Length: 455
Image (cartoon, rainbow, N blue to C red):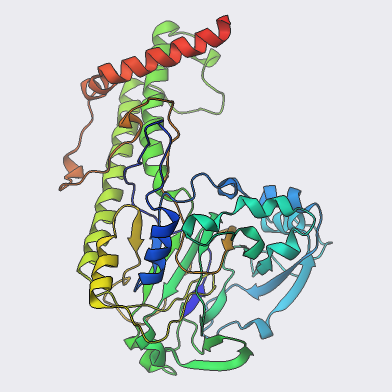
């Protein structure tokens, strides 16, 4: 079954493959990606597959400018912890522009306007299931910014997609689709999904009221279930995954920023120790001593190791799992796939499981606990649904200059990581910075830059 609340599961921070020309290379060809999608026996996250999509850089603010005042229907729901699902039939609706939604979502709205009757602290808004072909009917170039053909579906782009934009807490009741499957690309914000295996459907108390073609709803608010009324729900095995664009790359980016900070502060302070305000932005109020910067670097490195450790644990758990095929449910409440009897052979299941790693992350059980209430977390979220299965958050890929080596491709540790004992000294940093390959690359960049100035 599928349901959702706001919010892209953090893929592991893995190796970024680069080609002979120094260009990033996707881990799966379209043919292989489709083969994986059609053989997967559980929900999964593809990484490093959409780094070159123009839509990777979309934001709600950007789309509000693209749509230029176009009216969109938002479903309004109450924030809260009630045990009764908020079905679409029981929600109210508002027609507004995306710009008006963003103003309201920043809690800057006046008493006038389409959202005047909805206090931001008490309500959420959700522009769900908006077809690109209608939404961007006068901006058809937008269709080309979503490239589902990378996953083995030739000719599919934004024209066959839907857009979902919601505020904190926006969701769809838990449900499953009786046919079809979905590809979901989280663009901005976070979205949490709740997933349940198909064999657990009876524990979710399915209902066809309200009626919707191909959709079977659950009578349960899975975030805050009424266990007295629905005791069998405690037997349901919940899988959770939070999709959050760029989350996996934040860990490495913080290490990179810490190194940059230490270098800038060291060099500029040495150059002019008495006038740091000539080079330090006024918004930077922290001290810039070497000791402080060293602590900042070590904290970033430890956070990186923590992240990799957790990702490795998830990977190992997935490899030892039996390959049960969960039906989906998200907290932002969209749809996942419901499949009929599986015809996949044992060998095919094992082959699919063997593909899990840094570029294909399985969604595994959240814990051994069953049922129970959960607190939803979410923020302004934008996602695109393309029809066919899997989630598409992407680990960062870095474009490198021609001929650059994998130095720009930091590797996630593969062995045991005793991150609590990690300490990065000044000498450790210097050893990396004065590595001949690094200095050669820096020299080449300097020469290239000065050559452009000269010629």
